Length: 364
Image (cartoon, rainbow, N blue to C red):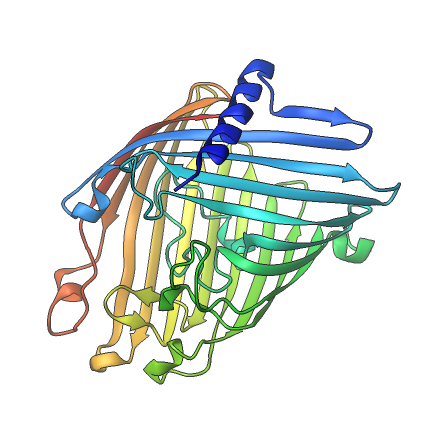
């Protein structure tokens, strides 16, 4: 739970932003600070109680830059999230840091940063992560190796392949061990632990809105994770394509992973194949309908389950962009998992209820 000083600091930042009515709050002598924030007022409807009810939250963050000399720039980014739907006196994960990293940039070609950031698999995963509520969950999760937001990441990025090939970006990443206690001092759950890991991504894009890329990661598993006798390593190889131009967004990815997909009350899928396909069309009136498909099939060793669908749903979404600051949305998840995926015969219990999320977002 935030102390009074933190709450006052956040309130001051918000007050400053409202007075200036601009994202840029400071820019002088090569030093710049941009403030950003959002409120997502959301309600969800589902027969599954864990997916139903008030899911509102607030985010606040900044990005700063400072010019060191003509070639080198220092930078940092921080973002904090607060659950607006939580009990006021509760301290059970109601607020936390999403992003927190700092680094150096050379000639807009090289950058090196360390801290809490996105894992390299998200370089591809971000292309289909465009749904208002759902998506980005075929194999990804927060603090799960290098699939999404994670701690202890050292990231080297290179634009235009060392300045030799326009549009070809190359990145390397190292993740240190995350086992033991989490940021609040509580013990990390097994599914949020990781050993040392490495990753690489290669992304190509052009001015016509066409993108293609590959990303690969490989990590040691922790002692607790290796208790399932499914090997010492976890990792994934993902490939994706995206077209984003002329009011049209089309994106697709395929990922083969081992020991990355985790199922509550079961454990890890030894191997899994995941597909994500997303599409949107933006009308000049502000309406933005979309349709997506998210699917994962895994090999489950425990209890001789065998091969089974783990994630399978179609998503229908509609954004209505009122202006650059405020958007309303509806997002309907049509769960395609059959009842046999939740039977005692397979020893696998995965929620297969449909879920509707509606809300309004204010952002600056």
